[in-house]
Length: 609
Ligand code: F6R
Image (tube, rainbow, N blue to C red):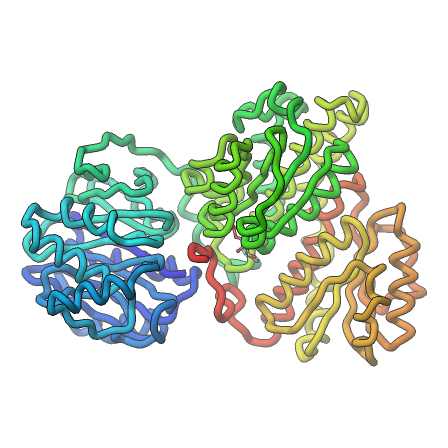
């Protein structure tokens, strides 16, 4: 999705804007632009990579200390220079960058045409820019009035940063359903759609709420509500350190983040336990709340949905709570049946995924309690849910999630164990055994990374030219197959499918031919033999079989390659089996020479529907 940065202070804005935009590249984009104010506002835009924009301005003297920048991921209109942001109103009065989508832009276009405005691009953003200009001139009451009138007139989602020709030392911002944070330090004020863009400069931020606006001066930020009244806000500290958003010697963010998993999983466990007992007090969930829960609905997108599929097995098996899991874009239109004792759990790394946010609101409208498992502090989902469980993955930059996924798994284990204890489905000894075993997960992940990486590199190099792959398993092994398959396809562009192995014979097995890669996950004791017999079926039809299983298991009769992971409690295998699957996705992609951190057509955080 698009990225926004802005700076108003003592330093030259150009360097801060370009640095910020480079840190937003991971979100995905197809053009970029900046507007810098010295005496006049100058706008520079380029199609394609940020380096094209840098080339364009390399000989310019840009001394301005106030500016805004944008990386655009095309929604309305093709990726070209005209459609790139910043957009400028007809007579240069308003310069604006925008993330999001204006749904009623066609109707607003007609309104602008009736008032003799012209549009040069195909974007909804240019409409927004001119609409602000229209209200600014019509009512002559200054920026906040123009922005507020625009906010009540447009439908959709937006985070905007605006410079007005007649207000030289100010940047104005506003947002609805699109992320934005505002930072401040002794050098000036900053804005960004995402924390990593400004983390190098400051970790002190304000959170701007939906339908609020703000004015960034060089030394302060003033917030306004929709009536134009001033709103008081506190500066908050972000606990992520700068190095967590740098590659630190790794070739890609994805492999760096894979290797960070022992540490962030440990941190997340520590934040949810106290004296070797689970402690959910930070989430706001109390024992009485848990006792009331009769069923659970887990809602998420992509990999976070796969965590939900794992969690479903564990909530039902361990805590005996009926649990459903749904894709957020389906849930929000499904008219699900929820009752007052349903707990809806929304899982989201960014906390800004549009469908997950809409699902959360849908659940709240039905009067149901909501719990968010979120990584980004202060994100929309975190702010709107009744209870929040923060994962401590730190900033995740690679588009393909790895470390956030692993911390979300831990979050689900702790919830399931605690719910099982409170609902008296497990005794104290087993409760303690589960916690002791969970504490071992970080070390076991480390062991996998240390011992298996070379073997997986070898397997991966063999398969860089394949067209298809299948991931199969049963129960929790099926749940993690879904994630393994997504990890491969999203970064390597190899077609891949995950199947519950018992389902193969109902159609998919006809796709198996000589040397088709089938990765079988077999960690669940109770269904181990059944998975193996499904693997025998594909092997006898020519498949090349890689088996991920537990140390000591003999799978030689079926496996062409075996990946052995350490033993753990049956519920925790997803945390271990996912590691080789992430490595397979990563190394196959690297051996194909593709940009593993920024796969084509994908965005890190999907803030539009
Ligand atoms: C895949 C991936 C996505 C996200 C999904 C949800 O590697 O990262 O499938 O899991 O877009 O994003 P969040 O968790 O931010 O809601």
